Length: 594
Ligand code: C2E
Ligand code: CA
Ligand code: CA
Image (cartoon, rainbow, N blue to C red; front, side, top):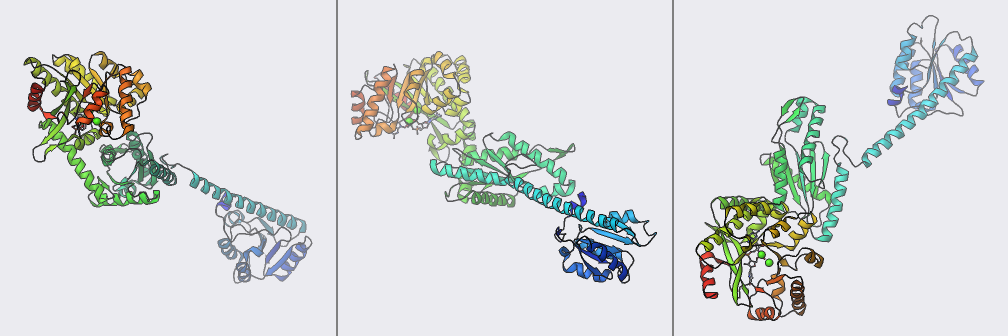
């Protein structure tokens, strides 16, 4: 029965329960008449055919008009067997009862199997009851089968719907295409609201078809599972990762993304395939091509963006595979420039192309330079001086910023040692610490190492940490700054007022110094709001025993305003631009009248 159900046929029977119609096929008119007679006692309607050819013609015209066939095996022109073969091609389910002459039943069982015969009768018919019973039985069975078939069909459809509605790819457990698109649409809507961006990495395996053709589909499936596992292990748990179909995967990257970050992730993915996959303990080397699309045109839909990433992947394949490519040419150019910059920074570190410039901080009460901020410059052999604004953000995307930070602190300590050895009056030097160094907890150990190496009191060094870095590390439970404070290294909150530092933070994390961001100083004369913010910050900091530095002081009015409001230290072009060390030394000498 299960076979019957599986091979359902649209030409199948529709059981006419009220008045079943029976086709009687026999070459002997008398037999036909007897059968009709018997069947009419039970309100069956009948039709007759004198051989296979006539029967087939009738049946073909409208199979559903017959609920049952009674077929004689021995007939001229087309015998019962041939007729059955034809009928079963049209309908697998119509119930058939076979009439045979005496003794021709030896192959009954195989007939039963092959043509799904419901019952057999030997001629001459000697029991009308048995016939009626068999007919009734056959019709009931057929009805049941038809019901079951309808149910199975329904079940199939609902299963299909369920799969369509499901969110996951059954092979890899990743999101399926539908879900990936849905997530992307949602993310795009969010991005439009908060002015961020997002990117899609779309990749597939180079030559996956070959693997499938060589090893078969089930091995191919294994490979896809391994691929998804490897990539899963290198992306963030929060990243939306989906299998789009076949060997194509897509990764949605949200947040503060830029091309460098997307490249880094792409590199990680390519790198994940550098080690072989194992199929049946046999190593298989595969590579991948990645297309990257960034939401630049905010009108793009999820589908459109995915399609762009797909196009980019196609281009990556064309340009030699095992690589990544952005969708837009401009992005490719920016990415190239940034990559160039990255390797430039690496060279600069080994070739000693970095240099520190120093900008003095003036203590208005004493009128003397009491400290300075060390600011990095890249003295490029061809391009000249490159400002940190150009390369620090790129260094921050890779671990280069860690090396830069170390270099800066060590250079400052070396300078302090030189001054100390030359009896040059020491001043406190502050250095900028990038958020990433702090988050990666690189700073504390480095300071410990450096103060072992250089004989200088930690109190001459100050770290400038932005508000946001402070908040982030506090939220992550990073308490390194307490140890640093305990070492007597100064701590200053940099760019104060631009982040989201609450007053509560200041109370709980009493750094020594607070630097008011330049943007407030810029407008302090002409904008009463900024002026009152600056006044408040100074008063509040003093209440918390912090000293206040104003950065970006460019003119006398600003200086006077800050002095009038008791700002402790002033830093800005009004006094001096950041200068190379020898000029800076001369500047101190004349300013402080040493
Ligand atoms: P920042 O920490 O806010 O540094 C102050 C910036 O303002 C410096 O720019 C300085 O030259 C500039 N500046 C100071 N006074 C004035 C003024 O009166 N007018 C104007 N228009 N600008 C003034 P710079 O040297 O280009 O540094 C930019 C940023 O790069 C710094 O901002 C800091 O965040 C970062 N940076 C610089 N050196 C380092 C470093 O060694 N490590 C790290 N991680 N970041 C650094
Ligand atoms: Ca600073
Ligand atoms: Ca600043």
